[in-house]
Image (cartoon, rainbow, N blue to C red; front, side):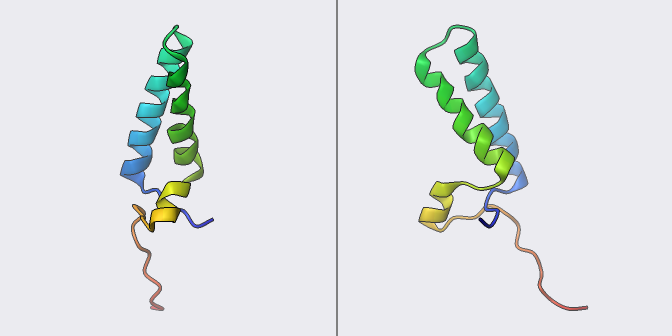
Length: 66
């Protein structure tokens, strides 16, 4: 699995995921547990949907030899 989630994307996923999980813990709707998904994808730096659709928010690393 090549990382396909960049740093800004990670931050947003963690914030949204944590907010949804906190809401679920505090008595929110059951569907709020979906916040586990963006939090997990941020932690592993890989999003299966990005892979399916060919998306990538990681900056490209240079492969030039200096």
